Amino acid sequence: MAIKKILLLGDVRLFQKCAQVRGSQTPAIQKAVRDLQDTLADFRKKNGFGRGIAAPQIGILKRIIYIHFPQEGIDGAFINPRIVRKSKKKIRLWDDCFSFPGLLVRVERAREIAVEYMDVTGKRRTIIAGGDLSELLQHEIDHLDGILAVERAIDGRSFALRGELKARQKEAYANDGMLRGGRK
Image 1 (cartoon, one colour):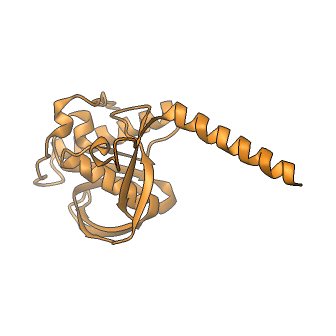
Image 2: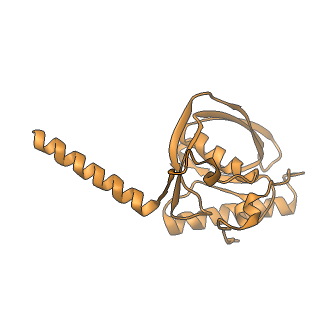
């Protein structure tokens, strides 16, 4: 098992564009895929969440992402992924990232995308992704281009600490419940 340190916001490698992979079955690429898989699994075990990781987040400047998204039956590497189509319809959401834990960023992304990529066997594939999977793939592919969610913020007020946002949502839910309870 090769669990790697996740680079944090401020590390210049996170802002670099990654190189194309030449040959998905080389020992170096297979090792990178295993390292991504192991690091993601470790993060999930420690934190109870996490669906994807990009190679630059562990210091590998290659175009590889690893996605664990069981709801869609996906658990594997996407090598040289590229978005070939984006819907005009958008979604807005609070995005988070292993590279800036605790910070959430409000972003806008395409509701649906088509992504072409190569799997670990070298086979070319295309996936049509909507909703959460679309957002996740866009986030991870951005990493490969040296773009972080903080650069995609809707505006200057689109930042929140995870704990603070959860507290505000809990408070709003409690207040809403009290209002409904008072009407009965």
